[in-house]
Image 1 (cartoon, one colour):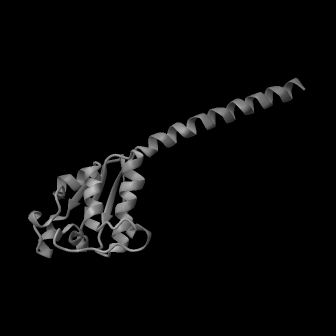
Image 2: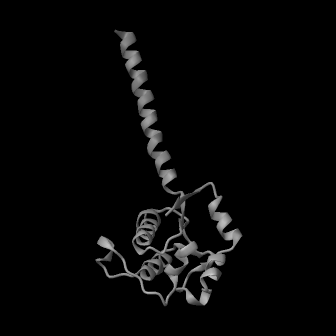
Image 3: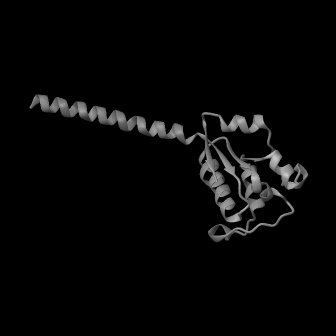
Length: 153
């Protein structure tokens, strides 16, 4: 009987030590940054990506959070281009540019692919305030940071 009690106590101690470390690990992982590679100018997809980066990552303490607009996504930050948001995200009447501006205001980074911008005939002057023209050191610093996760949209 004493042996069974000792074994049960050892199992209980081992189990409690496992559950004590799991939340600490989860909290550390929650602070990882996020690099969103957004390549489309489809406003439904883009709105989902921006909302995820802003509402789910940035507002939950992930840092840094950056959205890299490249390929056709460079058109999303063009202040002269109207946008439409589909579905439930359209309820507040925000445009894609409004969503990006709010993301930047809360500390998010919007990085433009310089080569894609040039191919699209866009310059920094065409973009909403707060975007950063991307350079290799900026993108490399986020993309290869071991504390930043990458998500392609």
